[in-house]
Amino acid sequence: MRAAVTRATTVLAALLVAAVGLTACGGDPLATGGGDDGTVTVGAANFPESEIVAQLYVLTLRDAGVDADLRAGIGSRDVYLSALQAGDIDVVPEYSGNLAQYYAADDERELRQLGPGADGRAVDRVLDRVLPDSLETGDPARAESKDAYRVLRSVAQEHHLKTLSDLAGLDRVRIAGNPELATRPYGPDGIASVYGVDRDRLSVTPVSDGGGPLTVTALTDGTVEVADVYTTSPVTDRTGHAVDTVTLADPKNLILPQNVLPVMRRDRLPQHARDRLRDVQFALTTKDLLDMNRRSSGEEKAEPETIARDWLVRKGLIGA
Image (cartoon, rainbow, N blue to C red; front, side, top):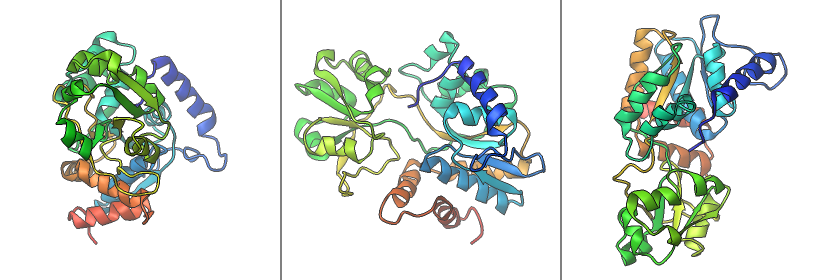
């Protein structure tokens, strides 16, 4: 998960967008402004999954008769949410838990509601309270893109590992993950406090590839016992081969829910367009996103628009 940032950072980002992002410099994804001409502009962050989901929204809106375009590669969360609030984009795909943490960053009481044990309803309640009045969210999808602790299937079978609490049976638990995992609430401290695993046995082996092939390779070569890999990321090693892993269950919700959902300028979309986006949200699953990401990062290297169109047509959500 990305760390929540302060509202001061949000304000600074908004100023930067206003001062720099809206100029006519070449290559700036915000250079031409938002949808003041009636066009609905869907934004995307600068990673493939965000662009794939954004394409789902763009293609669905167009099929519903809405003039929609895509503004991809906008940047980090503080930049694209500032652009949304400024009206430079109209819709952007987000993740429920991260979005709630972002807007609750300066409210300790709300942040406590998002601690270990928080479920999807808790996240929804916090979002209702902290989301700016100018914004609204669509329905959350079943699809979640969030941290997940994986072990090799052979190791899971040998040590009877099914949930995070079962890690207590290991002599040591080295976890491959991004460096910041060491201080995240769902990192070693959280595993120890919520699931009773001896803190002295837990450590993080930093691998800076966002749960990608290098993280998985640390698992397969025995450098670590556990790897933090996102639920929608293909589990492949650095040679591109799929690796058979088991995701350890998190029944106590140590890791915050991260359901995919659209964030929109309030009342920007007509009701029939909102209904069509709701259909997409209801159909989208974690496995769907995993399969789409596999097409993007695997041998096929399919374009986000192609991936999104194929899925929408297959689900009967747009015409062929």
